[in-house]
Image (cartoon, rainbow, N blue to C red):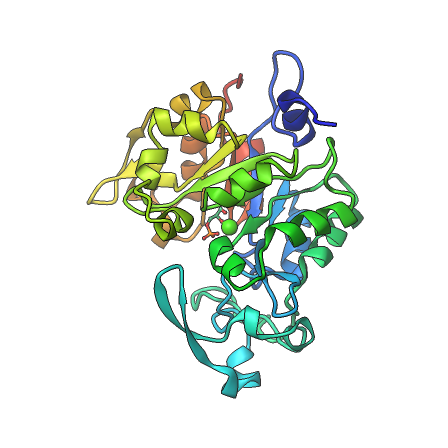
Amino acid sequence: MRVSRIGILLAAGLMVSGAASTKPLIIAHRGASGYLPEHTLEGYARAIEMGADFIEPDLVSTKDGVLIARHENEMSETTDVAAKFPDRKTKKVIDGRTVDGWFSEDFTLAEIKTLRAKERLSFRDQANNGKFQVPTFAEVLALVNAAKRPVGVYPETKHPTYFAGLGLALEAPLLEDLRSAKLDGATSRVFIQSFEVSNLKALKTRTNLPLVQLLGEATERPFDQEAAGGPLTYGDMATSKGMIEIATYAAGIGPYKAYIIGVDREGNAAAPTDFIARAHAAGLKVHPYTFRSEERYLAKAFKADPIAEYCAFFAAGVDGLFSDFADTALKARDKSCPMAPRK
Ligand code: G3P
Ligand code: CA
């Protein structure tokens, strides 16, 4: 039985009945990735302890068709695969780009379970390198189900056209893992996101869970569109016409931050654009990415203060945001930023 769109949004915590609305959602981007190696159960658990509303696993496939949490299928930047399997290095074309490395689709889950995660960014804490395994999506869902309070999960399909071409399509195991974890119902706190279009449109016919269309740089094309020879760019999708089309299959839109508050050549933040107003007019919730506390990621106008950035985006009217530092985002939302009533 299909549930109503309002029912889906209520279930996902996007809105509450009556005049008041929920606070913007804090989505723990790749776990507690400001503190612990990304996409590990330990990182997700830390984000849950912090109070994040959702945790965000990016998903790729193993050789044996198991979904694991990794930001990309090339695993050497975030694991010790190069040291453990030196002979397995190869070259592939991923979404039109030639990439050298070690790829999830060439390894069984048993092999991947011998790997240990490491911190991607040199300026973040390296003390936990070598300690944590690469989790399966099923293990991430078990963690969510074991949490002492309701926590949502916000999976992203990575390289869906590429994996479909290998006979390892992500969508069927994604839905099956959610079904097995009993997280595919009308009250489940789940969003499914993708930078591609066609897999979201296909998912729309297979699940009532809310979908989120991610937007990359305005001049870029979703890879499924590019592969099909289509002209559609993310810039086209960010027009009012594009948003109306997105709303035919998605409940939300996940733009890069600059679609909402641009940054000029001197690094100063500009006034908010009309992006959120147009998305809301199309019926789409807006969840921008990615908020990071280090000064190198902050526009000059925020004076090295991540709270100032969060306050600016909350004031602009976002419905949620992806942060590497969920604790700081929660502090901003719940203690620091003036929060106007939201409709
Ligand atoms: O999914 C939202 C955000 O995570 C998109 O960026 O590259 O970190 O997956 P990425
Ligand atoms: Ca992501």
